[in-house]
Image 1 (tube, rainbow, N blue to C red):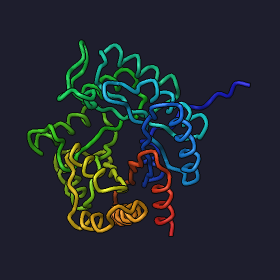
Image 2 (image 1 turned 45 degrees about the vertical axis):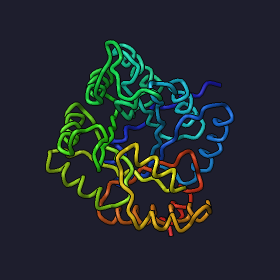
Image 3 (image 1 turned 30 degrees about the horizontal axis):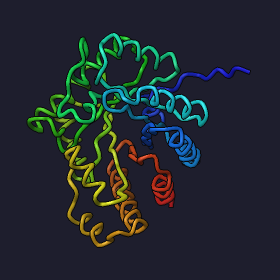
Image 4 (image 1 turned 90 degrees about the vertical axis):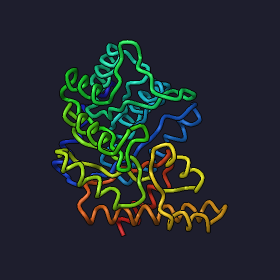
Length: 296
């Protein structure tokens, strides 16, 4: 028996209806064993009922087919509203138009539009032949091709590592919103003051769309130092000292990370953030523990 699924609801409608949104990010596994593990994670996370989930897109489009596969089964088998990522890297304009059509035809009504990271080993971004160079161009392409799709974009509270200045980075974000972006999800940060100052600067620059804070529960000091060095985020010394004191004890490190993220989320929501987006690294336990803590 063929089951016909209704298209997803645009996230803009969810903002209007529910106000505060909770979302999670998955990344496509490298092999079938990883896919099965991701299914188990998705099954566990279904109980907390995220408003939507996103699925990342590998550097250079390297996970394009797996992104599509994971997006399909998260939507079909688990009933999630899914926001696949799409990037400029390695694609011509015509290929991106085809991908936008395929996403829409699959019933997806939300896309995270990003410039994307260069393939591993490449020191900098290279524009594909007849491709796009900026996320703002990708937003404009999708908006023109599939006007019914809700578009999210990334924002950097502590500046994109490649931006020459915070002002230039903010101007770039404004171009993405002017091109048709519906909301912003931030890169990870660990000091709520960083987020609220960023929101104030965005509002002063005329960026009026929702700005969703991105939160990553820390699992290990070296791991988070690697992540922050890649994306330009800073680590508060108080958090670093707590992680250093935990040494090589994974359970203690995870408990510290969850406690810090829980405090962040509570503070963000108390001051009016429109929700939160969890970078969970395909692990269920942190998200489940956070949900339990927030429900208490």
